[in-house]
Image (tube, rainbow, N blue to C red; front, side, top):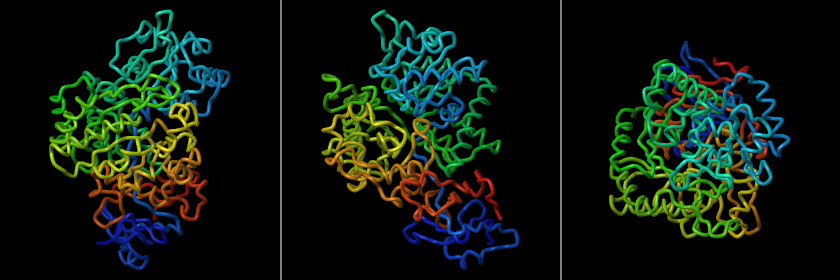
Length: 556
């Protein structure tokens, strides 16, 4: 069988232990046909075969983005971006410039606001002093807090407060009105809805489905998903695990697929909220049964065990050093989570839990252990998302229980775009040695999957890889938590595929697997570690189809 496309003269890292490295790859009918030497692969050339001479550049399996928010990321590409904006003067200049450039935009939304952007904290009065006659809001870089001006609060029905579940809060002022600081999804859901992202935010906010969306609304949301995938393809991403969404999300993606507009393989979770009954898991099973092919699937339940460190909503085992008497709360207490985890596991579904504080991490581990005790050990590959702080006693438990450590190299303060403060102060110097333990978890047997959490941070894979291999310890008491270049690439390919239960489809350059590949413009092993993030993608191929080609990169 002649190949449709062959790569020769490549520096191929296959992630296949049977043949870790190769110099050529052949693909046909959307699958990898053969991997080997130039001579082996050139022999598969037919009259219609296209040839790409890699010229010594690195060829890898397509990247698996193990944790992202595709629709919201796509919708936020046109928002005001505040990364590296600091102080009221820079904020005013940014907002006024954005407002002038978008005179007809009904809502001005900004993304990437650092918690230390405004000394003393942001509030509606500060935002009013910038723009008061148009609704404006800014989202924190971790997407767990929104600050809105008075008009946005008024129009969203939030100015006079809002009753929320524990862990979610509309912060109120001494005047009896909202300060403008909205903590977690229930608190800022109405503002997001006002900004026109309500349907895209619904899954992560409530676990619900939109009510009778019109075709025009569906088309608008489909455009956001497509826009997000186009953006991801330029960074070599061929598979993605969404950490938000619902059945509606999968239906929109299926329509994109039918229209020839789906550019990557996507997994979408069922979101389970603390207010739900176990019977709601029937919906998760139905999603899994309805969408279960190589392109669109579900099969897992996503939950939030806590919030984030910077807003004091991450659940800690001990008090925050900067907020005595406060530990936050587990959104699913053990007496609720343990039987829930066992029930989800009994149904054969995977579980993914956002857990950032060491209290949340322990509660999640305990629940997974309970599920294993009650149901017996199976190939569950349950996951913990983030693990930013972990008690040392819990480190070996992650690997021993086979729990996937779904980690983000871009999240540790100072590693990429996030500043050191207030995160390090909120953790406390005594606990820095227990924070962001990527290598320690891996060394103790935890399977690692890497991701960006886009749109929380930049989705550019190689920027995250650079962060993974260059991150420095916070003090002499901390261990070196860098994974090697090859380990980091594995976590973004085969490791991510294994974590998503798609390793039988993708993640390696191996005959029979899907033709998901990324050709880089350089050989990363010849690039200085602090320059890896500047390397560009030359080609992204998903299922044998070119989804991104850099300018000047020919195919055949």
